[in-house]
Image (tube, rainbow, N blue to C red; front, top):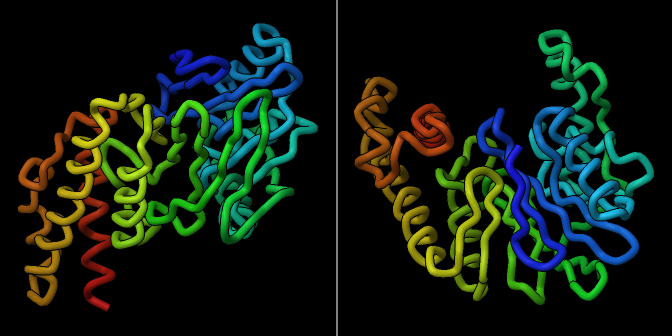
Length: 275
């Protein structure tokens, strides 16, 4: 697992095992907040060990940016912490997360110690603010990748933990393309110093405008390409001809997973348009 200090008392963690998924920690003098958990128990436990033994504070809150397994299944490794999320995240963890974990545990022994811990503090609209030491964390909705997405702004440092609303390759299979475009546009207007993506590396201030433009161009390109073939009888076959490169992205993103995610985006869009 890779770890970096992004600013004073703000840390970023990236999995070296699964899809470059990320998590964050904001520490105060008495307690810390964890933003998302990683995919595998060992990595999440390493975050807890860092907080407890190097920062010397307990974890009081865990924030889930959305319900997907690689961001929320590690809640159970922070006993006593209050989990914060969108109200829809709680519903989706209960409806989908519990049966998904049961199925995954039969395939992967490393997950046998995992238990779904549902958020205890939820919200629907507006913002939720946490004061951590000298920093304000402003939690607000950021949907599109999924319908329960939220982002966390470290207000004083202008650092945004964007969850999967911002990734090297936008992914909309479980969400909505128009919603994620709106979220990305909003992020681009926030005047940020850093974007901590849900997967991939931290985006620095000088890179933000280009990253926002590239993601919006990609989403516009796939929407236009799929719309052009949606009514044709062989539309599913024609999807293979819509390459990730002609849509403005590279297949090397996310450790080579980008091509598969791109194809799933196309199929999801075609299904939506066919309806």
